[in-house]
Length: 353
Image 1: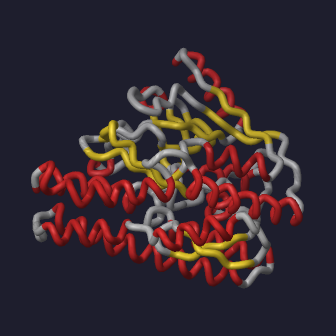
Image 2 (image 1 turned 90 degrees about the vertical axis):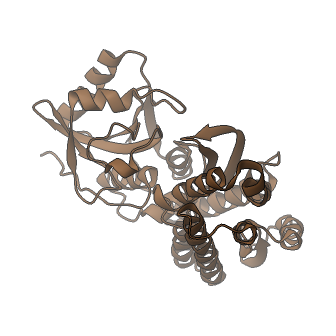
Image 3 (image 1 turned 45 degrees about the vertical axis):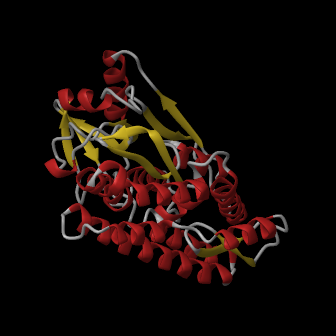
């Protein structure tokens, strides 16, 4: 008897695809926050020499595909990924899986998704959805950011699977195989390793444009945009930050609310109450960034224009350097359960190391 696929709505596409696929294979305990946290999804990078849709290239998460790959590896699962240079071969492979009733994840471009509202369509090629079957010439699609399932024609599916530009999908398809039961001990270890990696990525990634340093880099740029670019273009740049931080599946606050939920769930699994306190701090950090996004939105709409408002937006991005140094000193001790200071935006975090 063919197993029924159940659509799960999520804040973020890759988290949602991973959660749906793993639950389909019997991992009922998994959740979007757990996938994101175990996969060390929280990140920050500002690439100054690259523009996306005319605005700054800023990302609040790790590279596309890394979340599911890392989480699967730590949980002891196998994920098969396939890319194609030939559209016919890509279609044939997807048709085979659909015929067998095997749900698979697909990386696609957003711009040509017909069910997306026009205001949300832009040239972004790292979106993820699930194909779980086919009816005639239409694929059955579960897009985690949508409320219900939908369909895509063969023509539309090829168009989004082979979208051009940065992060071109190249027909990428992925799915878990040979799913084994995950023990409670394995889950605990996966959570701890996920937190350790995320702390390392934010604190010690080299260069001035990524991790904590990248946040400070963006703050410095925001202070200069109005004078350097002019009010109109500077406002457009702030609008881009709002889109990347709040509107494209981050769950709000640049993924900080999702990460807070991960820490809260982890507190119960690890029986570590301090993680609950840290979760609260991440929620406060998300609130701060969301308030900053509201102000950026007002500037974008022309309701605010003075330099002091840019300064205030930049202040919300800044990290307390003293806290950062404290975190670097404390990180080396790596004692389970001790609270340390984390510079993921003026907020303490955990050292479950």
